[in-house]
Image 1 (spheres, rainbow, N blue to C red):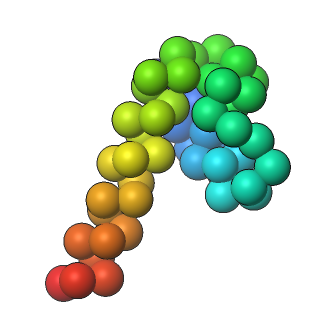
Image 2 (spheres, one colour):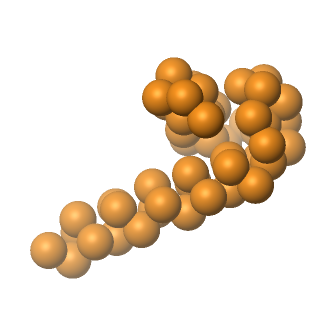
Image 3 (cartoon, one colour):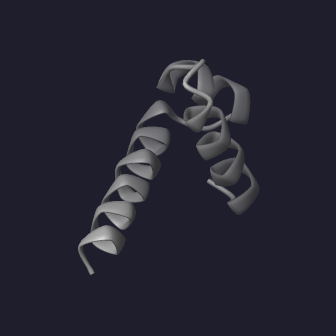
Length: 51
Protein backbone atom coordinates (compact mmCIF):
# COMPACT_ATOMS: atom_id res chain seq x y z
CA UNK A 1 0.00 0.00 0.00
CA UNK A 2 1.37 3.37 -0.98
CA UNK A 3 1.25 6.48 1.16
CA UNK A 4 -1.43 7.93 -1.11
CA UNK A 5 -3.57 4.80 -0.84
CA UNK A 6 -3.19 4.83 2.94
CA UNK A 7 -4.09 8.50 3.26
CA UNK A 8 -7.12 8.05 1.02
CA UNK A 9 -8.22 4.98 2.97
CA UNK A 10 -8.03 6.85 6.28
CA UNK A 11 -10.01 9.77 4.88
CA UNK A 12 -12.70 7.42 3.59
CA UNK A 13 -12.79 5.55 6.91
CA UNK A 14 -13.08 8.79 8.88
CA UNK A 15 -16.12 9.77 6.79
CA UNK A 16 -17.96 6.77 8.32
CA UNK A 17 -19.72 6.18 4.99
CA UNK A 18 -17.68 3.19 3.80
CA UNK A 19 -16.76 -0.23 5.12
CA UNK A 20 -13.32 -1.78 4.77
CA UNK A 21 -14.21 -3.74 1.62
CA UNK A 22 -15.52 -0.63 -0.13
CA UNK A 23 -12.38 1.27 0.84
CA UNK A 24 -10.11 -1.53 -0.33
CA UNK A 25 -11.82 -1.57 -3.70
CA UNK A 26 -11.66 2.22 -3.99
CA UNK A 27 -7.92 2.42 -3.31
CA UNK A 28 -7.04 -0.84 -5.12
CA UNK A 29 -5.61 -2.55 -2.04
CA UNK A 30 -6.45 -5.68 -0.10
CA UNK A 31 -9.07 -5.48 2.61
CA UNK A 32 -6.54 -6.98 5.04
CA UNK A 33 -4.18 -4.05 4.36
CA UNK A 34 -6.99 -1.57 5.00
CA UNK A 35 -7.89 -3.31 8.27
CA UNK A 36 -4.25 -3.29 9.42
CA UNK A 37 -3.96 0.40 8.52
CA UNK A 38 -7.07 1.33 10.48
CA UNK A 39 -5.97 -0.75 13.46
CA UNK A 40 -2.53 0.88 13.44
CA UNK A 41 -4.07 4.35 13.19
CA UNK A 42 -6.35 3.62 16.15
CA UNK A 43 -3.43 2.34 18.21
CA UNK A 44 -1.45 5.47 17.39
CA UNK A 45 -4.31 7.71 18.55
CA UNK A 46 -4.77 5.72 21.78
CA UNK A 47 -1.05 5.87 22.55
CA UNK A 48 -1.00 9.59 21.75
CA UNK A 49 -3.87 10.25 24.14
CA UNK A 50 -2.31 8.15 26.90
CA UNK A 51 1.07 9.84 26.59
